[in-house]
Image (tube, rainbow, N blue to C red; front, side, top):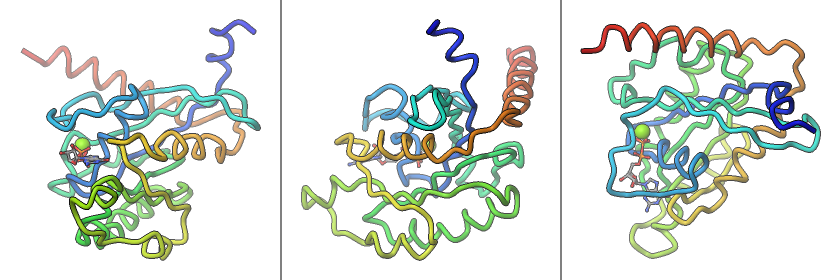
Length: 200
Ligand code: GDP
Ligand code: MG
């Protein structure tokens, strides 16, 4: 099949990354988008979202439009536009940081207030720090299960479970004829264009 046609026909799934600053959201996204990990960069400054198409067994190609924060989570000030029409959310904590786990409740509540139907995936990051004995485990898989969501332990550094997480999100997407996330994408592009004009 013509590749362009395949992409054009794919469903769009809006995925939002949530969790406290430092929990590993951007590194997770970078591993998935570019298959890279760079501990030295400041990855929170960047695009509003990235898109990657994955093949699913039931839904054909699905374009995951993944939104990352640009550090606004520090001020607990994620705009409604961030949550709007999200199909899935990855709520992140650092497996070695109990506080980041405790804060998941807050993030899930914010999400539920803004977007009720969104599927949630609880994700404990930085498993490699525990494997290497650099830090102690503060959060278990059982802890993550209290939210009654699908749960993952990942390591962006070691590329552990990252692609599996996003593949599952794409596989879980209900087939949709008329996906409302498309209109969000158009709006965001418009916002970015406006900002470009304002810049400098
Ligand atoms: P965010 O604020 O939630 O976006 O978190 P970042 O993705 O910016 O990561 C915060 C810090 O944790 C950075 O110093 C990363 O290098 C580090 N980090 C993120 N993921 C991993 C991981 O899988 N393993 C290790 N060892 N460090 C990680
Ligand atoms: Mg970040």
